[in-house]
Length: 349
Ligand code: SF4
Image 1 (cartoon, rainbow, N blue to C red):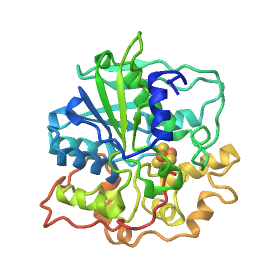
Image 2 (spheres, protein in one colour; image 1 turned 90 degrees about the vertical axis):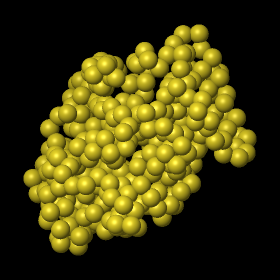
Image 3 (cartoon, helix red, strand yellow; image 1 turned 180 degrees about the vertical axis):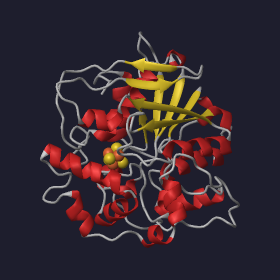
Image 4 (cartoon, protein in one colour; image 1 turned 45 degrees about the horizontal axis):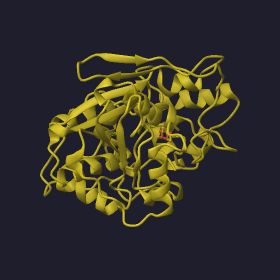
């Protein structure tokens, strides 16, 4: 955490925790930059939809997508993710920036007497900035653990949270500015997420500081939304859900999420056997399974591939391709709820 206990941001956060009162609504016109952490999943889409509902001009919105495979060999992510995010950004006329941990989760997982890899991010000038990894030499050689404790479930900080933090802290364009960082966690997803504040100073906030001052607020606008409200907002804008939802996945981020259910594992094994075999091989190499007591093959044996995946090979091909060739938007009348809606909720806690 960047904020020390006596900083103005830390005092503001403590005030919000101990005297919650009504949820603060940010004055959207007051920010110089509005940044949305955009996975391409339904919750980040509903954040974008909400900003548009609130009348924010799309030219003021920046989507930031963190590539979890870090431009290394495909391992955790859905192949279609980057192309789909580009298609959505183009459809809405909003800017999209990619950022990543070099080598992604795979490099971190295979780290052996090495430091964590550098963070890289696209700049508005069209360059790629590199922020060298810091920290001690160390060894992982294991999967992220299944817990809400982000020190042990290191995938989210390594591939997403710290990438955003590093990008903001190392972008001169944000110095002396007011930023609003928007993320799509919802209370309904887990008890850990239910405890998140809806509005608080962001971890990169340095308000009132003499050196490198930045006012950075963190807003979770859909924190109190239930799933039906999320899908309604997506329908209103006619956003065609990404293919993984259409073939039955209820939550979509990494294709090989460590929280995957037996049905998700059975589906991935059926649609992408080589990728599944890679994960199984790492379990054997590490001598440690992702879930305690059963390897991924055993877990997949307990599940069944989603019916929608079996029935729609065209959508499976799309989910596993690197080029989004389908429509990105449709009319709200023609929009249809994907097969995965209101389905399994397995995913990050
Ligand atoms: S989607 Fe799953 S595997 Fe991917 S970063 Fe989040 S918790 Fe980790």
